[in-house]
View 1: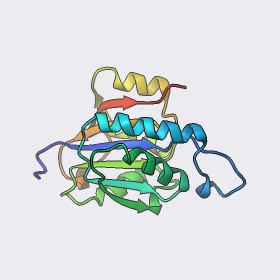
View 2: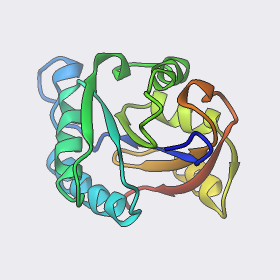
View 3: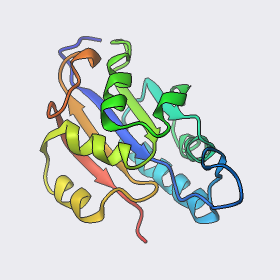
View 4: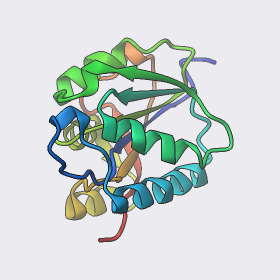
Length: 172
C-alpha cells in the first residue's frame, strides 16, 4: 500500500448503554443498544470498506458494540483494545491514530463522546454532499459513525486534513 492512496477512518460511537450500578467503564449495552449495534454493523458492511485495523476502547459497552457490529462484516479486521480511547479528548485520539502503522489503510475507531464527535468535527476540513449538515443536525448519538478520508501517512493526520465522506446515525 502506498501513502499516496487515500486512507479511510471510521469513527464509531458505542451503541446505547444501560445504567446498572457498576462503574462507568463496566456499563453494558442496553437492549436497544444491542439492536442498534447490529444495524450499524450492517450499515458499515454496506460501505464495503475493507478495514485493516479496529481500535476499540476497553469499556464494556464499546467491546459489546464492536462484537455485535463486526459480526455483520464479511471479514473481521485485526482488533486492538486500547485503554487510551476511554475518556480521550480529540487531541489524544489524534495522537493515538498517529501511531498507526502505515500498512493499515482503513481503520475503524470504536469510542465515546464527546471525543469521537469532537474528532470528526476537528478532522473534517471538507465534506461531501450533506454529510456535515446531517452530522451537525443529529449530533453524534449512540451507534452513529462518520467516514473520513485523508491523504498521507497516519503520522500526518491532523486537524482539517480529512474529508467527511459519509455519516450515519440510527433513527430515534
